[in-house]
Image (cartoon, rainbow, N blue to C red; front, side, top):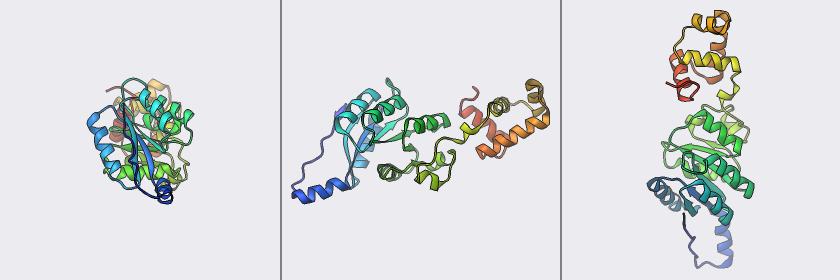
Length: 237
């Protein structure tokens, strides 16, 4: 756990007050030292952002968020120890005005759903252009939602809904139990006739479920649907 103190500029009281209103304070949490250091460097090089502290695990993140009250906490999804989503929940209980943004190398629907459920406003993929992170921080500091383009494609809602904080989950959450069953069998490579026999329904009904799943997920062929089932861990490869 490393604290990074803000410099004490030799400004007049009035100018310091103006600067304070423009500066968004940030807590950076990532267990990979190299990524954390690079992120801190990028943010501190941005005029309106300032990193107050950094941590390598969820427990330290909760402690530092309580101590420093940052405007934004950037949390890596996959860290040892305290689960990142639990850490976010604790932070928001202690500091409800803090905005949470998750950062991850691999965005899965279930992680996106967990992030939204705990009250996070942002979800950014590490493979995005580095300029996206300051932009995301500014957006959530204003109280807006911000998702990476690849994440936006998988949430329920338009870009306007995202800006207005109307997104409440992913497209995968809208699937019925029967549709999830059909999706699992499609992911395992079964033909529609086989799926119909195993579920005790007609081929026509299976076809109807597959069509519905594709529409809800905005997926347009069975191969992509099968890959989705594996990626989102509806089945194991």
